[in-house]
Image (cartoon, rainbow, N blue to C red; front, side, top):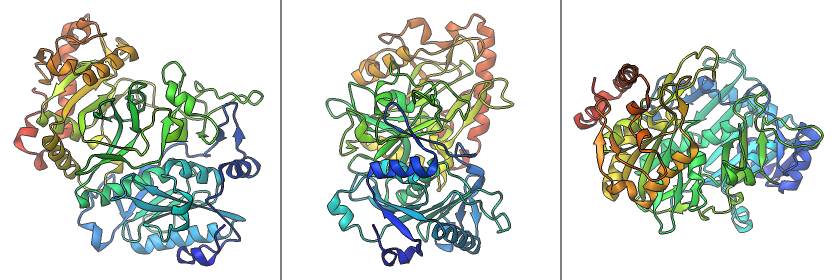
Amino acid sequence: MASCLELSKHEILAGEILRNIAVPRLYELAVSQEGGAITSSGALATFSGEKTGRSPKDKRIVENPQSARDVWWGSVNIPITEESYLACREQALRFINGRDRVYIVDGFAGWDHGYQLKVRVICTLAYHALFMRNILIRPTPNELTNFGEPDFVILNAGEMAADRRIPGVSSTTSIQLNLERKELLILGSKYAGEMKKGIFTAMNYWMPQRGVLSMHCSANEGPRGEVTLFFGLSGTGKTTLSSDLRRRLIGDDEHCWTDHGVFNIEGGCYAKCINLTEEHEPQVYRAIRFGSVLENVVFDPETREANYEDRSITENTRCCYPIEHIDNAQIPCVGSHPRDIIFLTCDAFGVLPPVSRLTPAQAMYHFLSGYTAKTAGTEVGVNEPEATFSACFGAAFLVLHPARYAELLAKRMRQHHTRAWLVNTGWSGGPYGVGSRMKLTYTRAIIDAIHDGFLADVPLHEDPVFELQIPASCPGVPTEMLVPRNTWADQQAYDRMALKLATLFRDNFSKYAEGASQEVRQAGPKL
């Protein structure tokens, strides 16, 4: 328990305040008060209501003189005034203080103690408290006793609709980050991922100012301490491919790279569940047990067995669990400087090779591009493959200009002679609807060949359009698949599609060309 006096700085004056309570108690309250259910695996099944994903168009950053000159303003970072923020904050506090009970979760962001932030979550749902208990690094009893004042506070009043009459608030959902007050405010969305990504967004502002590269990537470590980073947008296989029984998992989503090595920002994982099977993702599947939170996953009302194929609520079904639920997790979640960086892309155009080695300039080009593709049918109105570019493979969470992160990555790669690879987990033999998806066994064989050092010495040949260096062979992968043009029945159709994709790359990169060196500008496809 925490007294009202202890929380008076946050203006929390609610009746019952439950601070850092045990997981079984959170289960009881989520089931009895919030409609949660316990599934056959022991996980807590919850539903986030109308919002089943993030609301990026409703995200705002408070425009203050101290930070305004550094923020990458635009469609990602939309400004809101301090006055509007305070009006929304007052609305949120009225709602929180009017509830029968309020939950407090204290934890850390960042496993490296030199860069660690103390985070306090103030929320009104037990399921949100359990979610953030999993996502944050869990303090020891002694650390909780001496926790003191937090460095960052989340005020989650997601059950309360935002007041659209407040200037700058465009809908009943409003996610606001105040960098000066070091607060995240949530109104009008119960989707728990807003809290997780709000912390990451804040880290993307503070860490580069300390010379630390914050990254939207997963990381694992081999038996000899060799670290690999996996960058990729949703659906490219970032979580799946970093879960490797031969290697120890450092983390599945958010990391920082310092002068000393890499560290995970989080104490847990937030994995997509759609079509999850024990065969393809055994570690994730087995992690879903007591203490885990299933979000918007349909389950049988009698047996309570989760149905991971059911997308009737959303395609974006999720599970959140402590990283300790992964048998081969590396605790503490830190590692040495990366030997390899892998950029994952799901190319639905069927143009890019399954694997290619990148020059340092190409690595910067593809990092700034952050390419993947949506397939037809995944969203309303998408009838053919659609290119998606997200700078640094996480534009939605960047606060500074993408070039700032790219410069830090280039510096680290040069210092530590890190190799870079582009791996296509998408289509071969034609675009979506014509060709076929890369087999997971082939992609895993490629990752193994990178880790084993085979692809570091194999002969390479150059793609004529993208100028990518394609290995001549790879164990476990049919040689004819390595050159994508050879897999198309109509090779002239391939040439046309390659030209189309190259044009899309060029047009997208024009946004960053002014801030990039000539070497990086010339590292893109040739038209």
